[in-house]
Image 1 (cartoon, rainbow, N blue to C red):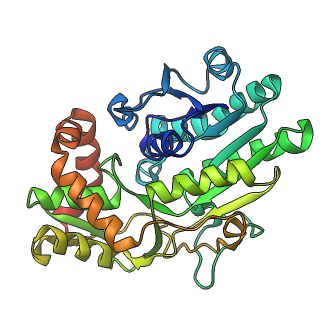
Image 2 (image 1 turned 135 degrees about the vertical axis):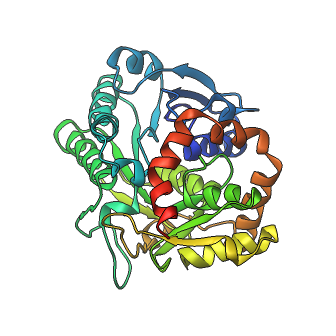
Image 3 (image 1 turned 180 degrees about the horizontal axis):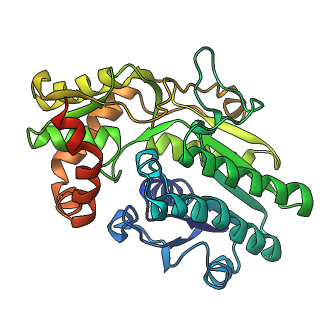
Length: 337
């Protein structure tokens, strides 16, 4: 089996590559990644994957990388909600370009290559705010941020290729993912790295937003199972069953690091911040999926990784792009808190 993993130098993609190499040692893995700010070659350290640097919006590079591949797993995406809301047309346009047009380019190439499976990796955010109950795969898509809307658009492009061209498309929608190699702008690595440096921990609003958390290797496992055993034309929720308030996750991080709660700063909430996501993932359980990691031990392992791998994240945080993003996103909020 030869597979193409797009965005494989990113957070979830690189964890997926590691899982595949562990679970399917006879599979050949090809990674294509544009190496934007969140995609890093270091994320593929100690893997055997063949690496191709390129943009999924480039049909020539995509066709070359996909040659001979049996399955395509599309992780490539602009993925941070905050960046999609910053009002920068270049940033907002990148979400549409990669998450929608990029999916079109991949589907065209996959159609011509006659791949056996095309797995479109999506997010629970396409369901929008879920006040009560749990999202099931047949629920309408009601995204409330440019990021979520771009992911929903990518899903629909892939779905259309399944219907119109017979492309064997399978969609996964994962819950909030955490673990090693996650770019330090996301909640858990942001709070962990700030706390390690005794910096302020900016929590949006009251911190009572609720998320279902899933460890990166569990999310990767769900995607692999859906790719192997799922039915083309179907979507599968991949959840962790770990619903937590954001502020409680931050308290847990502080406890693990032995840092005081006084580091927490409640700041102005972001626009249209969804209060809750929650997934029903019975459908993928029926395929044999079950999370392998409990939340507490996975969070501790993640926090310890950021403690031990400061060689990985300090160059990111010290870089001009990260400092510019952090100042634009939090400086005024922290000053007003």
